[in-house]
Amino acid sequence: MSTVLTAPPVETKTNYLNESYGIKSWLLTKDHKRIALLYLAAITFFFAVGGFFAVLIRLELITPAGDLMQPETYNKAFTMHGVMMIFFFLIPAVPAVLGNFLVPMMIGARDLAFPRINLLSWYIYMVGGVFTLYAMVAGGVDTGWTFYTPYSSTYSNTQVMATAIGIFILGFSSILTGLNFIVTIHKMRAPGLTWFRLPLFIWAHYATSVIQILGTPVVAIAIVLVGLERAFRIGIFDPKLGGDPILFQHLFWFYSHPAVYIMILPSMGVISELVTCFSRKKIFGYGFVAMSSVAIAVLGFLVWGHHMFVSGQSVYAGMVFSILSYLVAIPSAIKVFNWTATLYRGSISYQTPLLYALGFIGLFTIGGLTGLFLANLAVDVHLHDTYFVVGHFHYIMVGGAIMGYLGGLHFWWPKITGRLYPEGWARLSALVLFVGFNLTFFPQFILGYLGMPRRYHAYPEEFQVLNVMSSAGASILAVGYIIPMIYLIWSMRYGKPAPANPWGATGLEWQIPSPPPSYNFEKTPVVTEEPYVYSHEEAQVV
Picture 1 (cartoon, rainbow, N blue to C red):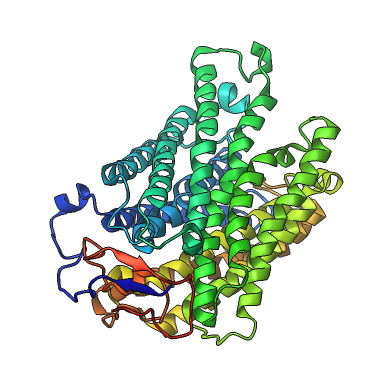
Picture 2: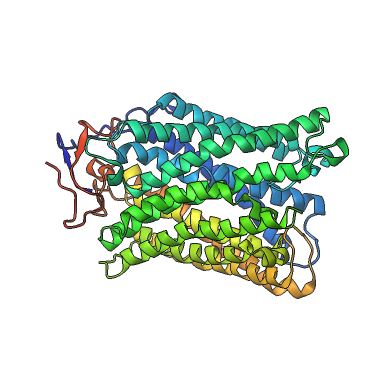
C-alpha cells in the first residue's frame, strides 16, 4: 500500500521493547504491542499443555490394547487436549497475538480504541486459564470438549464446574477483543484509508470480531445452564428432570461452528498478505476476497445443524443444513482460487512465510474437500464420530489455522522483535511440519472410512498399522513445532538486526522502524493508493 507520511519515520533506540524493563510496566501496560506479546507467552504455554495431552493420546494408540491409560484417564486426556487447544490456543491465537500487534499499525492508529479494555481482556484470559488449569490438576474433566449433556450436567464426577467456569470467563476476553477491533477499524483508520483500501488481514479480523460478539454469548449461556442444572437439579437438559439434551447441542453448535471460522478466518487474512507479498503481485479479485470473509461470517451461523445429523432432528432440517453446508464452502473456495490466481505468473520468492502459506493452501483444501463428505446427509451417518471427522477437523485447524499462525509469526517476526531469524532453519521446520502433519492425520481418514470410532483408547488389531503411522507422524510434527520455538527465541538476542521492511512489502506497518516505537507513528499517515501495489519494491515515503 503506497502511503505518504506527513513526517519521515525517525530511527530511534526507544521502542516498545526497551522503553521500560520492569515487570510491572509490562503487567500494567496499555500498549497493544506489549499486550500482544503477553498473549504470545500465555498462548504458547497453553499450546504446550495441549500438546502434552496429544502426546499421551498418540502413545496410547500405538498398541490396540488400552495399556498406557485407564479408560477414564484417556477420556480426561482427550478432553483436556481439546479444551486447551480450541479454547485457549486456536480461537485466540491469531487475533490476540498478530491482531493485537498489527491492527492499529495497519490502519495508521497509535493504539486500539480501548487500551485498558485490551489489557483487561488479557487478564480475563489468564483468569479463565487458571480455573481450567485447576480443573486439570484437581483430577481433570472427562466430558469431551463439547460437554454434551446430560452426562456433563448430571452424571460426570469430574471437574466439570471448574472447567465450565474457566471457559465462561474466557468468553468475555473474546468478546472484548472483538469489540475493540470493530470500534478501532470503524473509527481510527488513517485519512484516505477507505474500506476498500483496507488490508485483507483487517477484513478477516473484522469478520472474525463480528462472530466473536454474536456467537460467544450463546455458548456462555449454554455453559451457565449446564452449571445451573448440575448445581440445583433444574430440568434443562436432563430428560429425567424434564429437560432436552438436544437443546444443548443446538446452543453449543450455534456458537461452535462459527467458532471454527473464528479460528480459520484470521489465518486466511494472514495468507492473503503472504501470497501477495511473495508473488510481488496485487491480490487477484480484492473485492471478492474481502467480501468472502463477510460471507463466511454470515453463513457460518446457518450451518450448525450438520453436527447433528444423527441426533434425531427432522430429515427436512437435515436436508436444509446439508445444502447450507455446501453453500458455506463457496466463500472459502473463492479465497483459495484467488490466492492461486495471485501466485500464477508471479515473481515468487520462496521465503519461509510463503512456504507456510503454500502449506496452508494445500492442507486447507484437503480439509475443505473432506468436509463435503461430512456435509452430505447420508454419508455423514456412516462417518459421524469416526476418525474421518478427526482427520478433517485437524486438516482445517492444524493444517489451516496453525500454518497460518506460524506463517504470520514468521512474516512479522522482524517487525515484532527487530531481529531476523535463521532462514535455513525456518525453511527446514516448515518442511518437517508439513511432512509430519500429513503422516499424522492422513491415515485417520482411512481409519474413519474403515469404521474406527474416535475417543476410544482400545481398538481392533487390524487398525494398528495406520495408528502407528499416525503416532510416528505426531513425533515428527512435534519436532516441527519445537524447532521454531528454539530459533525464534534465539533470534531475539542473537539474530541480525532487521530493517524496517525486510520483505519489501506494502502496508503501513512496514513504514515504521523495527521494532516499532511505542507510539507507532510520529505523525498520522495519509494513504494515497490502493492496497498491494507492487509496481515498486517499497511504498513511497516522503
